[in-house]
Image 1 (cartoon, rainbow, N blue to C red):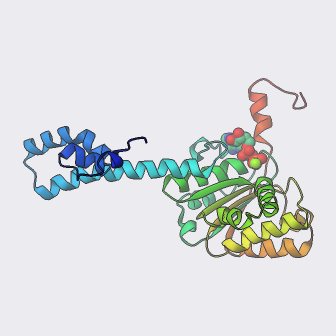
Image 2 (cartoon, helix red, strand yellow):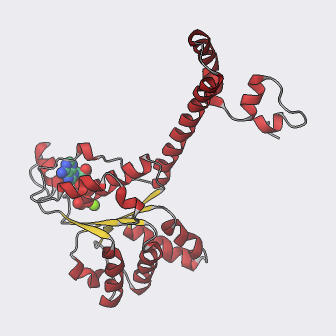
Image 3 (cartoon, protein in one colour):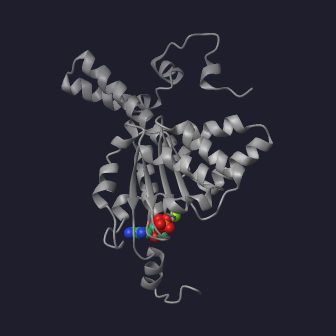
Length: 263
Ligand code: ADP
Ligand code: MG
């Protein structure tokens, strides 16, 4: 059997300071203890202040680990941030609305955002940047492309794990659903999409991106009834962010010396 710090102590309660800190997993404090003791001696601080400094190292190390795991759990395809976004590129963009959303107050109210615009205007970039801000502040977040989520739900229905799969998309405080509208869904897929949106309604936030106006959603979601039911719940507590302009990808290729986008 592999000896873990816990199993190594089985049979006797740890006695030495090192053993106890190891047993309690106080690794950050353990590493910094000599420096902390040295400084405490020089500054002649109170016991309470010493304990606070000792524990604050452990608390901040634990918080940092949690943030890193939130970011990993979110499964962002790439890390994008608002500071790398060129606000002058889109022909039209409600910058103030997006900056206000970056304060993340919408998460407290289980509200959402719907980014609508043609391809390449930065919808995925902005949705990811907001998701990254949320995860970085400790909010449980998940990114998925719409088609991946629906394929996963359909597959999980086939192998009887639908309940668990639905939980994956209903549990996070923020669900980022990217690329709604590139591919249409059949009746089953559309029903799954509705279930996700309805399970999150007024409980969790959705940030969604789409290249299609709401009036065309009947073509994505099998029929107008399902589409209306989805839109109804989605927009009730959401800010709609319309972006217009040319694709940044084309601009980027031109900047790099490519002129023919069909290459
Ligand atoms: P969309 O999801 O609207 O199709 P993306 O967000 O995927 O577009 O953008 C395509 C690429 O161009 C990405 O690499 C993205 O980071 C970049 N991009 C788009 N708009 C901007 C912008 N205004 N400033 C900086 N980068 C941008
Ligand atoms: Mg996109």
